[in-house]
Image (cartoon, rainbow, N blue to C red; front, side):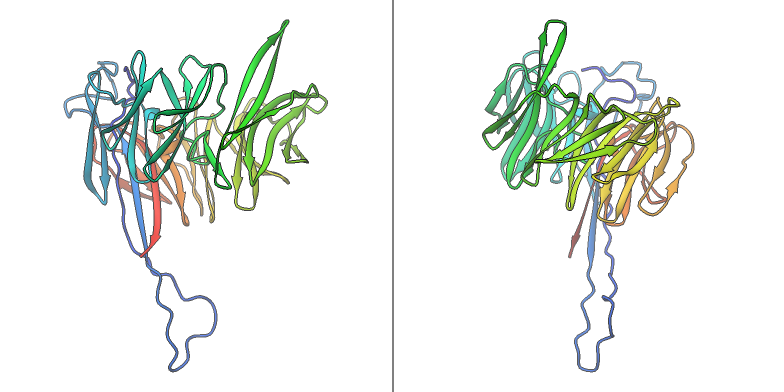
Length: 407
């Protein structure tokens, strides 16, 4: 499969591990004879994926236009623990959207002329007939659930370990893997049930009619067509309720979010018109995240809660990540160069010609935002709240995953 200079992939995962002591909780100090609280020790593991090419190959110029052997490499705790060959003669693909880290393991997908192949840590997992793009993935013990969109744009299949669970010949899946806010993509769990939504488009005369459908553990709910709605942005199950983001024909300056039978009018920022939107559940409610243009032509993205705008950032491409400590974002220009990194505690403007290759290059954990970045010259690096950790690689970084555990 051909890849451009910035769209080939051999993965690198870097792991930074350290322990932190948390202070005693507020209150009086322990008295004589009382046990002092045991400090909490935290272990932080950072995995980063990227592209690695032969040392004598200039991947930035990419004169072979992707037809070059490379490898997907996994580093943990600073040690290289996995190398997966990728190139024209393999069943793995180095494109950024063709591999991912799930549960600390490396999964890849590849489509031949008539089959789709999945691997885990370089070993064949399963394959099936048809060319699909994986839009959602859930790993549950030894079971791997995948939701794949046919590569011609119509039709999808939900599979468990490669075996069909439900198939549509015309359904269109909204959403893809790679959004930090939706780590399992278009397939997700709600109250222990595996769920996803899709839409079907029917031409009636000169008009197009779009119907939405919702799958939850074998049950399919067809959402009735409503002529008062001009556009449905997204549908999902959240907290056991059917939720929908949409715009009414009679109210073009705002959009609605329905949570079950409750309807909420969300007023946009003045002059801001969403072009797309995804619903994102959070612990205490529901968010809507979308991009669009304002009246001056400035492109940007917003996060809304049910009360209105929570956060707005300008940029041709804006990626958000949310932790319990706050919201981080990276804004890029039309060519993908980073303009601003907004961490949990403060903002940074970096030097020119640095790219965040995919949205998966941003994540948050604890009180930190982590960004995997690739400059126009020199080695890629991990940016963590102002600190840089260089990654020595003849290639670029494509994703980052962070876990923090008590030890």
